[in-house]
Length: 349
Image (cartoon, rainbow, N blue to C red):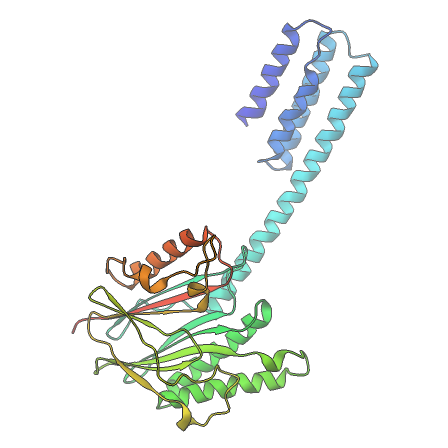
């Protein structure tokens, strides 16, 4: 508020000190204009009233208030001030609506994409979600973890498409995973249940959208037993996890990846479980294609495995923060697609 008030004072003083034929009072309109850029309608209206009153006083001081030129300036100031007050009012209404939309979006994200617990059994976990849309908090990427009687099961996935349909498909898969992870004894059973759930939903909504039957979800489903230093993986068309051990990065590429969920017509025997070593001190990094398909200004894809090697190795939380900061710097601050990451570290016994 000091800036517009100071402007009024400076312009008024300059107008009084200059010769009568030189009028600086039209510059007073800058005071309410500047106020409207940061203040609400009440403060903008107050500064406008002060400005109009000052214009009248300057007109009286110069004995030009009765002239047509001064009256025209005064009328213009009144009209501009009124528009600035209306602008401030409308802008504040839009801001309040945006705040409400953001709060609803954040509540939906917490309900749909629940934050992973920092620890499950002998595992430490951390997650990160980066939405491509500027005002969005959720999208088609997903992740979840569930504790079973013998270990931990984790899923990370990416729904084909964008917008609200992808959010709906993500919600469907997350609900199916939380149900299946505790009910089914084997990992292939879990994946089969997920695939059946996705295909059933697509068939149910096939008449509503001609392209719905073409939708699918890429996913990686993992099981980490409590008492064996391994990780079991079923990859359904998803980017393979990275294993970090002793500052070395290994891609856990499965030999026979399954089709994405919603496209497969497989029996439970067709899902092949790949087993990899996952020893105490090791860290797994799961991610969606929004990470590895991010491009810099030259159009070069983000080299995730190479960049991860610069991580100092101090817990899964610092790993996802390291990748997030480096990724955003690489693309110049804005992603072209949603990106999700999950880091899992096995603790020493």
